[in-house]
Image (cartoon, rainbow, N blue to C red; front, side, top):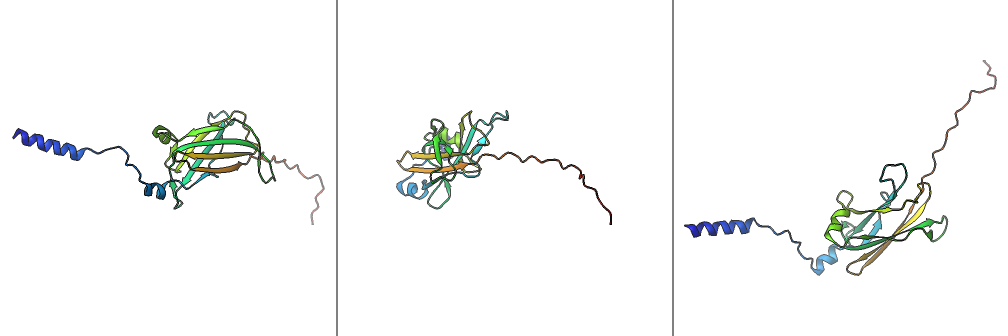
Amino acid sequence: MHRWHIAIASILLLIGCESKAPYPRDATDAALFGPSAMRVHPIFTQVKDWTNDNHPDGIEALIEFQDQFGDPTKASGKVIFELYEYRKHDPDPRGERLVNPWIGDLSTLDAQQERWNRTSRTYSFQLAWDQIKENESYVLTAEFQANSGARFFDQIVLEGKQPEPTSNPTSPSTAPTTQP
């Protein structure tokens, strides 16, 4: 009877155990669902103030990868960001490089969990640069180097905020008014 209880307990234990180890992707999975394109998200990538001191601290860059179906997917590798002056009306809007490149790591489980945003399905990077100005335009480039050897590139122009127009209070008219 004792052996019977041990056998049942062992079977229940084996049934209840679930492996948390990832299943390896085969070549077909990688080809179907691996990244085939990357973009710097044009709406949510912007100059930010993280410390709430009314002075921008840098750029929050959101990177989105798509698989061959155009759906968001994850990627493993590193992203190299560069920031340039903006040259208006130039075929290549990148002027002088303003800061040494930032390198964002996406090659470990911890890095993936830290940077992945489930809501936007993008990777988020805070690119700190204390000399950034909200009223100036910049060109931000991103080059992704996948662990598999693939490379992707994108760039975006971050438009500077235009100053709010000041309204001049209208003074009362000094011209005489006439009644009909």
